Length: 545
Image (cartoon, rainbow, N blue to C red):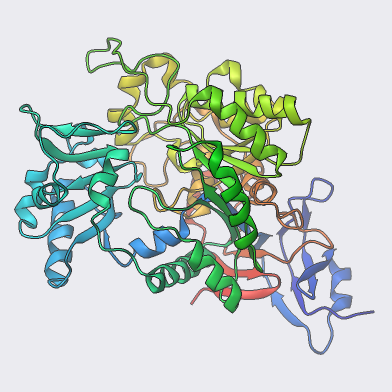
């Protein structure tokens, strides 16, 4: 009998396998799981076997993130990082401190400020001028759909009263028409094009910094949701390819090639070439990201009916469709025929419907293909469209952390959606009951990459740090086992890792050890759990200090 390289004993082991959900021991040989069971697994222990005594701690399949921007997130950690600021004063203090600590930087750049820190989600150039008046400043908000700039940045970009809004964005303005300092969606590129470029070395450093963080959170693989240049953000592809070739990429990564929304089908041959070029080792690029709309907070998410104003009356704005819906059907059909997965950004209910219509057209044109198209974000889904996910084989790619009451939801979203549409938000439970496959991701650095925090909100529909008892649409809660499946088997399915996500013989030994059994503990304590160890292919990539 071949002895194992690695054996975990004295579980619990949550397998994610419906036929055998719980075990107490697991063996690994040659990077794959060779046995799952109980005391009989100990027979595989030999002189060279590493034995990990779980002592009641929980062994799970490694988490996978189905929608993340790892290189950008890792790079931003080295810039002006405002993710932990609360309120305008705290945010400005952080910017001032960063600028003073970096007097030689030509531009002050960074990200992470929260819209609820400012009235209407709209900070002004004048506020920035008080802390950095002499150098240009460009700071993307937490969701990366808008940027806050100071007067100097606007001057260098040549933006003034007569500058028209781009087709895919909006320049927020003062009463006299002058730019206020807030740029939405595609308007961010008007300033971002001037920022000194991030170097290839910076991108590689960012990837490796991100990989360390993600492994520490139990993440063994992910789908990078944007391989390409967008709104001044550099293409991270070279960092992935360099890390894959050198062996520094320990995670399993699928890349989603960016669909340039101001172009059409003429870019498809280029995507085919890039797919071939960007596949090496643990990195491959077999997905195409199509961003269909914006976000609800700045009224660019595409809705089937108009947004409301502050008085509750309908406006003339129903959001933006970045890709013509009829053309989209042809594009998706052609991509599907070429074996590409399509990764949709679809946040509003009109965008969700347009994405599903495109998948339906591809199924009609090409028959059923194993392309695993998926729709990310799904903030507002019309009830009539919920059953279509299962019928079309379209995966629901959810970002659970967003499905909770917080100021951005309560002050900048619900009042402008109205009660009916607000009740259609993040319908995880309805999608599951309708038979949809669920995958899960974070959209980091838009929000925390911590899967345990995401699991907490998916189950409780409350944030771990909530200071009240309000639950956002409790009927849309997931049970914990289903939420774990979304972060493991569901995301592995979307990422094309058919031999990961479940703990069964023959599967990859991508594993995470938690400090407690969250499946038997109180659901309100899920986020308190911590990752002790992470393995990829049986190799230890993180051990808590």
